[in-house]
Structures are given as C-alpha cells and as structure tokens.
Length: 221
Image (cartoon, rainbow, N blue to C red; front, side):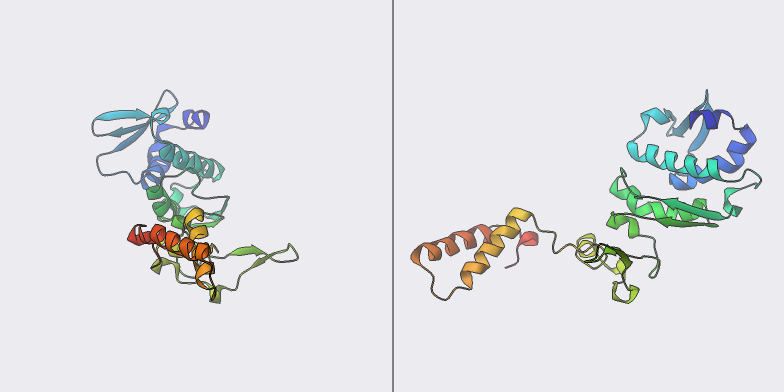
C-alpha cells in the first residue's frame, strides 16, 4: 500500500483517494488526510497519526479501501462514478463492533456505483443492508451448499444482535453460556421426572438456587 500511495500524484490523492477514505473512516469536518514520505497521515485534533500508529480498525478499513482503489480504473475523476463488482470474503474480521455496524454504509458512500458481494459471520455487518440483500448459505445432509429461501429469513434490521444469532440468519440454538445451558438442561430433565429420589430432589433444589441467582438478563425464570 505504501508503494501505491507513493506513486500517486497529489491531485489523484486529493480528488479520488482522500474523499473515499474520508467516507470509509467516518472522519469529521476538520480532519485531514495526506501522504507524507509514502505514509498515510491522519490529522485529528491538531495531532498527526501515521497509519502505523492508528487502531487495527483504522488499518483494516484503509487496507480494504486501498485494495479496492488499486484495482479500479484510474480514468474516472472520482470513485463515486466508478462501476464494477467487488468480492470481499469475511467482511468485518478484526473490526471493532462500531466499525462492523458502519462498514456497509461506509462502503456505499465511498463507492456508490460498485456492487459488493461479501461473506461474513458477523451479525453487526448486516446493519445497513436492506431486506432482500442478505442470502444465507447452508450445507445440507449431502454436504452440498444451497441458498436458504429468503422468505424464511427475518427482517434483520428489527432484531437485536442476540436475536440475529438465534434466527435462521446464523442458526445458533441460543446465546447462553454453555455451562449455564448445561445447568438448565439438567434442572429441567430432573424436574420432568415424576418419581425423583431424595438425592435428585436435593439436586433440583441446588440447581434452582444456582439459576435463580443468575442476573435477570441471563435467567429464564
């Protein structure tokens, strides 16, 4: 990336690259981007940050953007008018949750005429997508990949993250800690028995005390 930035003329960087990065990084009015000695410099609050000094989230976004921009035609005056299809595998990896929630909208702003086809295991990356823009790939019993019927998928923008994870979009049975889930299963299995021994009755009471003492948001009682 440093080599690519070094090869850019100042006009190319200022008119094409900087505006796209500005959108992707969600920078604010007054922030500035420039290239100095082949390094991207971010100016915020009267401080200068070389790319090596910023967070992994910034680095991941900048790396993704530079990969896209290097592959695009240099004929256009702005990336806003550039058309094409971009494939991204595992969008959201190494990103802070805040970045995951913003990344789709940021890509749309920076490259409004590009079509993105991406994969992800990150529920927060669904923020910014419209209903019908999400497809779920599953492996069937014959180990073949198929696409779930979109009619069975929920309207994801109305769901919390835990609801996304336990919906058909991600397919988790629940988001409870496995140890707590095991305790619940043991408790209800014993509770369902009609003729419990004294030891089993004591165990039911012991498990109930454990479960009742859980924070309300973790409790199913």
